[in-house]
Image (cartoon, rainbow, N blue to C red; front, side):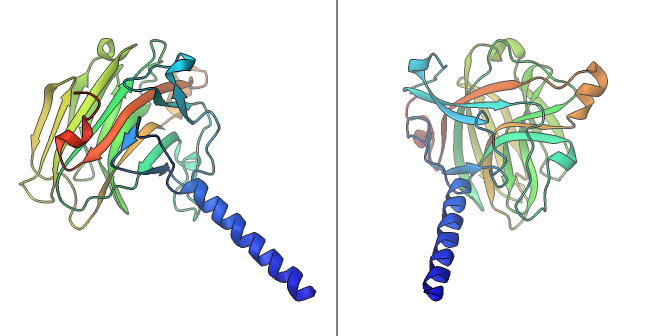
Length: 266
């Protein structure tokens, strides 16, 4: 009997661990919203608040780019998390996030990515806090391309050499507020000069870079949501807590061909 009880406890622990792993592994998104990649909650996901990321419906008056659903992110003051192993801690590094991390990893070659982004009209600019609304990262290495909300607009930042070497505005504040904007990216992942990184917004080419797009011997992946750093600057300047921010994403797609990522926007 003692052995039987012991085994039951072991089985329960294993089942609980499996359930926990499922909460931080790939999430199930409808093809209406995501295709070409699976996503998990950034960091362990265990810090996620219920309001952090939700699949929402047009029937409930949420903005949707195509189909019936979209993804809503909300970030409030204090929404910070850490890795399970303690290697990274947003709370200790003056950062906050509700972000999804892609499981579609690419080591080299040409790829296409697309997403549509909607910024509500009451979205609050929190300059000089850095607000990242999409990024291309590398496994076990630094971020390489960041899509930032700065001065109300949407900017692309080249961080390939591990420091910023260029900032380009691809959408203005007027472009963003209360409207859906379609982002299309065509990139050749390479640590050599044959790389390229092109961006279209609403079918208009707005960024055309040639050169290294990643580090050597690394795999790249896409992350999106709301990620803020140097959060305390806002309170120091404005003498109040940083405000809540809400953003919507839809048509988040990845593939080897352009046709793979614009399937519902043609």
